Image 1 (cartoon, rainbow, N blue to C red):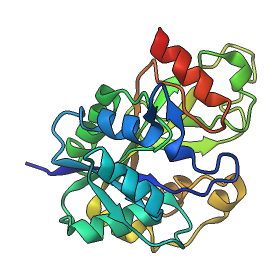
Image 2: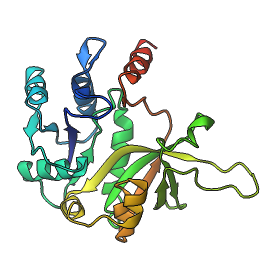
Image 3: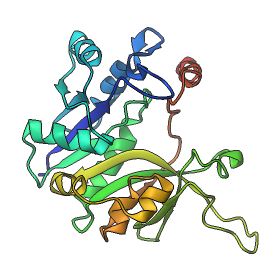
Image 4: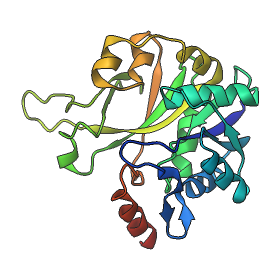
Length: 244
């Protein structure tokens, strides 16, 4: 049986929202809400926060969570993820779930779908999630990443542009990429050593590194993903969703 471990990278410094993991949402910090949602994911061996902040570290300990202190100079969340996996001594044949620390209403079922799909697809190195756009205005917004994939779910491309282009105006379906990933541990260790390619640099999308180096990334399609918190204004959206 494949071991699946949930890791939640969380850094204090953010250009748009400093201290975001410690933001209060209806009486709980965001990082506590994310952590408690992660514990509900079926089949995981454990959940850990990986941080470079003593404030976040102490807060996680205060609510009884498991937390790892990682380096402060990581360029990406994947680098922090890889360090955390090494600290835990995770076996290369295991799977790591990368849970974004800005998803306080994470759907545990979505996380299970992503990890289970990777466990069941031995020729893939990673998996992720996409949902159909519900707001047409978001399609042209470069902050909402579009995913394109084949009938077998193999990722073909990710872009900030509105793809695929509908030449005949026949109403193409657009899928919004959600930053929820599962990695094979051995590939995660390798991934962070791979150089950035021109597509990743151009789009500023880390997942393109997987495709540019010829690896297979599985895309799962679902619906109803919860709001993410990118700015202080987004906290109100989560509070509203909780009240519903």
